[in-house]
Amino acid sequence: MADLRIGVVGAAGRMGSTVVRQVTMTDGCVVAAASEIPGSDAIGRDAGEVAGCGALGVKIVDDAASLFDKVDAVIEFSIPAATTAHVARAAEAGCIHIIGTTGLSPEQEAVLKTAGEKTTVVYAPNMSLAVNILLALTRRVAAMLDDDFDI
Image 1: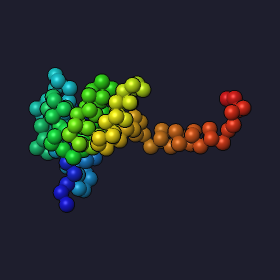
Image 2: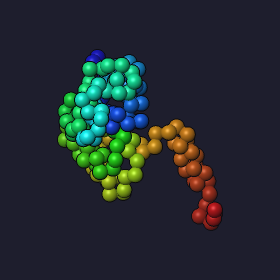
Image 3: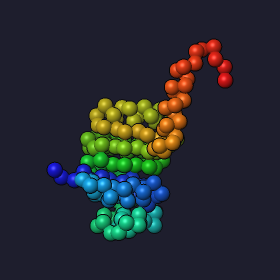
């Protein structure tokens, strides 16, 4: 079976660099494309070298939309306006889109939901294990309290 080809939007950022490193350490996955915002010092540099894991032969480009035709999945940590544009592109390309972008409005989240009708969209605005455990516990506690409870 061929390796899963992954693109990283925001590849030179803190989370993007972490994603690049993690993908390179994961059997069956390869970083196949990477992007950054136009004007970034990382444009034209090797994504692996920027992330500190050695050369991968993948140059960082300034056109994130171009990644979706080259990969099986895109992992994105960027800004809400870019993410909503990119998720529409993912739907067109039939590419899996994994989104860790925070701060999306309800209207922007609706755009993600619409795209999810055409392709797989995973939206997790906070990927911290501790935060997600806290959110799950809060839901369970809230379910145990009736409408008369006042915090």
